Length: 89
Image 1 (cartoon, rainbow, N blue to C red):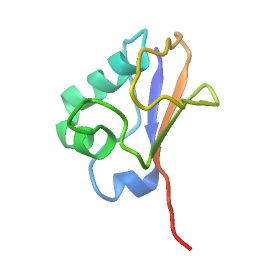
Image 2: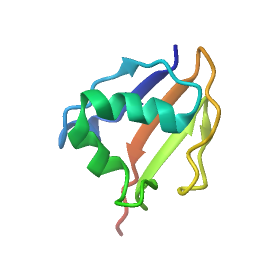
Image 3: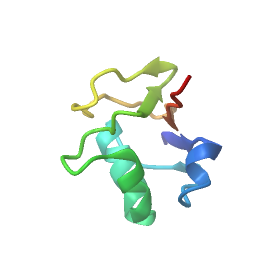
Image 4: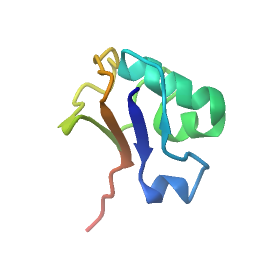
């Protein structure tokens, strides 16, 4: 099963432990996490269901660049990392 990881920075704001999910797409994987941890959704997705501007997701080491489309396929052993990008000067 795919495994979803959240960075420690996000975990400071909302409970979102690492977990395995049954999913074939990134959208389905995130949906499974949000069923158990609904508060995490607002940190990751906007009100349109798109990735927030400062959230990056990597699937098997590849950054998801399209924040609007989450239909990226995930495999049985995929590793999904969700992180908040830090900005500043």
